[in-house]
Amino acid sequence: MAKKGKAAEPVLLKITQVRSGIGRPEKHRKTLRALGLRRHQQSVVQKDSPAIRGMIFQVQHLVEVQELEGGEE
Image 1 (cartoon, rainbow, N blue to C red):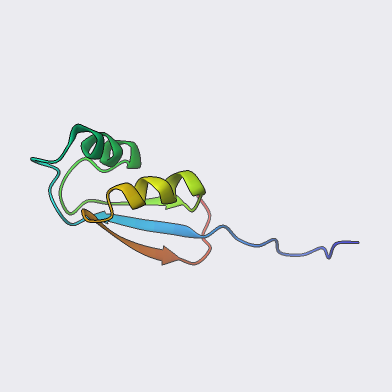
Image 2: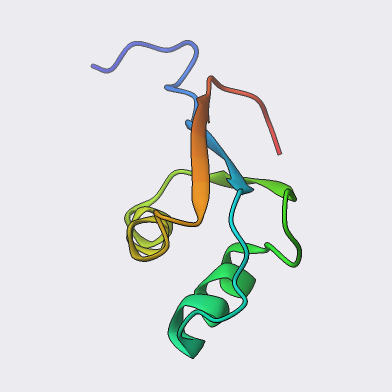
């Protein structure tokens, strides 16, 4: 039987846009929008998932990522 108690809390990612999307390919700008980033130096918090990691990988040169422990959204 599985132990009852606190389930593993989801890891949250704080994503901050540190470089502008101006002059970047349309695909990169759309990826920034899909992540919820609308302007330079804006931060958003997203739940860690393979889809989010893939988007971050595509625009890794434009963003900074920090892992936040737990938290509920």
